[in-house]
Length: 473
Image (cartoon, rainbow, N blue to C red; front, side, top):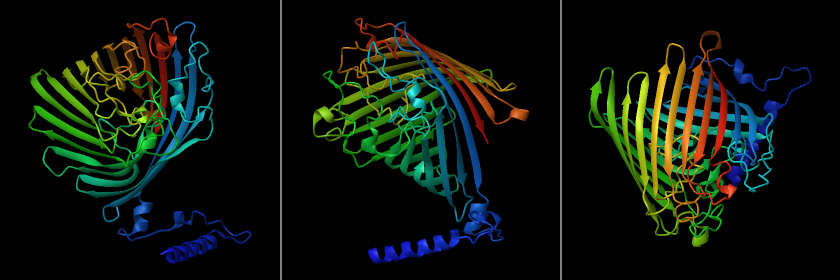
């Protein structure tokens, strides 16, 4: 086997060398495939030459205004990327994409706040959280996959994008979370979608490489253990990967059901059940009620035989309940939302993997890492399709355990109220392909911080301003 491999590599080396050698004054043919023509519509060359190219350029300005006496931060990030996907060849397609980011003028991301010794939280996420001082070499091979499609179904092997309740894009910075694995979507059954697969590595948002499932847990700030000591699970998780299965089914025009299960080898299992039912229609819209239940349980050692290094406490569990009442029509959508995380334990889901699936989720904060939570959120959005403007306003109240209740408050977050205002505009005509977004977030403290500003900075009594420009082609 080794001899065969060596011979193949030797022949490839000879072929590559001869293909890249040019005599003086000879026309370079490094990209000679561009001039190649083919009439064979069923061949591989035809599939590659008739593929599609997509581009994305992005600029992001973010600034945090903390309480007086605490450090403020700002960042300017710019970047771009290209994706190429072949046409189909016997139902197969090959895809590849990459993206680069530059820090074009920002605060010092390596400098902690001198009062609290706390690091930057938001702006560093525009770059590489594993190397906050890096300003120029921030690039990532994002997608590299082989896809097989049949009808409305497909299966993908390799580096890819998925969007599920537990592992999702969470694209609130420069680039989203990516995964490597085998993932499929089956749509051959009437009114039913089945998706799932096996994931063996993840490249979290705000990082530049792929990590095994165990390595990916703890790249973001890890908070404290149940006894108040610093969490020590980063780099210490033993897992062979994660498997997920999800089913979405429309029973009829009124009732939609959804069920997902995420099994993370040797660490934890999380199951979700969700339902939405249209109560009645009114004018050109409808009023619907939704319910959600999530159950978590530790698996084996919770990630490590040493409980101090385990991500999930052995024998631990968590439960959450959610409810939503919503009205929506073609342009308007408004909802009242509630979520309860019980006292059974912390709801844990690696923040590196995605945002919360709760009805009460609001950008720039999460309720992951907490137990005994009552969350109330009102959301409203209105679209102006004739002028290309979308608006959203949300307000929430989040009643959390005391910051000193370490067993139920992992990140030392006090109870808070939050306000989000989001406006987006998509250009047309001459500037078609461009869009801009302005997001303002304010969080007000309504909990006890015991006079310790480490429970305040980047958490409450602060504002975050976001201005984003995109160009897609």
